Amino acid sequence: MTATTLDAPAVDFTRLRRERLAKLRDAMRANELDALALIGQSNVVYATGARAPAADASLAAHQRMVAVVHADDEWPHLYTAFADGVPPELPADHVHDALPVERDAGAGALAAGLPARNVGIDEYTFALYRVLAGREPKDATPALGAAKVVKTPDEVELIRAAERINEQAMLDVESLLVPGVRATELSGRFLRRIYELGATANTVDPIFQLMPASIDAGPFTLTGDLVFPTVTRDQRFEQGHVIWVDTGINFHGYASDFGRTWIVGNEPDARQRAQFERWREVIDRVAASIRPGATAADLVQSAGEVYGRRPWPSHLYLGHGIGTDSAEMPLVGTDLGPAFDASLTLAPGMIVVLEPIAWEDGYGGYRAEEIVVVTDDGCEFLTRHHYWPFT
Image 1 (tube, helix red, strand yellow):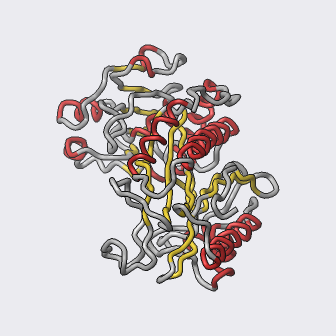
Image 2 (cartoon, helix red, strand yellow):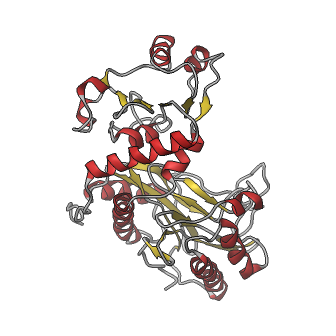
Image 3 (cartoon, one colour):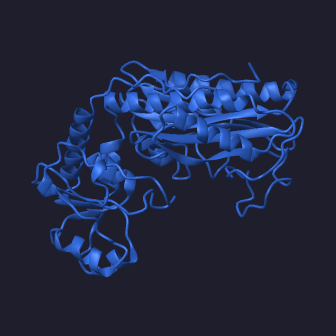
């Protein structure tokens, strides 16, 4: 095991930040917003390109960054405690000390710099909710989703690089999967390896989940459906255990998403191979349907043709986007329903993480993930990993 990083992607970060901000302003105009107040960390990164040390899972930072984007100002305003993470092109008069928006003083200072009307906000703290009471800020989600949904070439390359790091680390983890290994050992090896390879953060608690053969044999769930995902526990894996894997890392602000099914110490039996082949058929049919102008409903229909129904649990989905968040628009085959799927039209630059599940209650199943980007005439797979031990 070496400590070398992978080759850096050919990305112009100044261009990346400029093009993202332009997309965001276009979306603000379309949604009649004069300003955006952003406190979700991935949204601050998207609007400003700023970086902060990752820490708490809910905040993604020890001290929260805040961004304000005005429609009539060339540059966003950034409030941060981490000067090293400020992009070099951001003017000094647009960089400010951190605002503790969890408290009334910080929330009040943020609110004082916002227009009286037509403000979008992505998240609330209790203090911010109080100080904005009566001003009726709008939900920033439509503008953020519209800006993020189509990736620039630089964004695609960063997601490709993040996935490459994730997959390379998994090659190392796979070598540990023998009877008697603990799930925590797999997570430890994965986390060590991604940083050796150049990851800038880990965004998903590594999931190495023992899958029971039936829903009733698994953990209790209020939905009565398959329980997935659950984070790593200090559990020893034994011969024949089926492990569902899900990990995600961050590379310069962009996420990866990796999913596979492993079997401990055994080759898959005939039924397990058949589950894998059905999963592959779903992926192949859906990928063949991906093209500019197709809708999410077209993808759901293609997936359902394999089984005559949607081949994934009701609380999950056929696919989701990925970018500065590990799951973002476009959302495909969710509980938002058929009308939502029919309203979502694919365009070049959209990225979809496909993750159907081939499940037979009483016999278990197969799950994996594939990242695809919509091209001018179809799609390209960004995922390049093998399907061990199935192929």
